[in-house]
Length: 120
Image 1 (cartoon, rainbow, N blue to C red):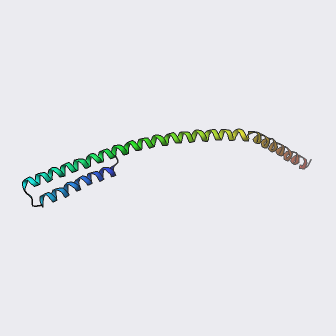
Image 2 (tube, rainbow, N blue to C red):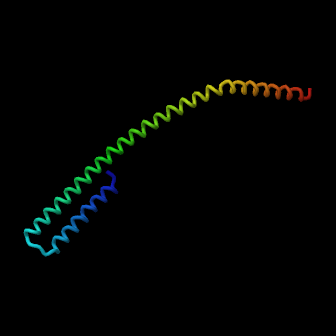
Image 3 (cartoon, helix red, strand yellow):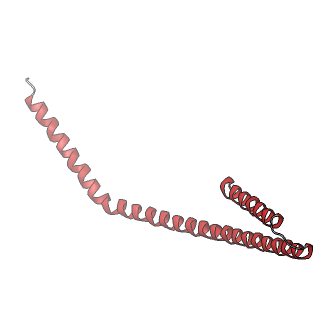
């Protein structure tokens, strides 16, 4: 758990405790009514904490599932890309050889022209 969500959770609990304590201490009630209110408040907080824990577990499971799916997708895309590059290389190979031959012929012609233009 990173610091930000942990800090938020701690702040949430402290704020809830402070608000609950303030309300309980400043409300004129009988001892029996006060005990019932404290019990209800404690049960409420426990339920909220349990809900937060459950949501955190579900979020962790979702993140794990999403990460796995993303990794699988990236692997598939990488494999497809590699295959496409290999197919492209094979498709241009005949043209590449032709261009190399033509470049060699041009270089040969340039050399012949240079040789002819040199003063003897």
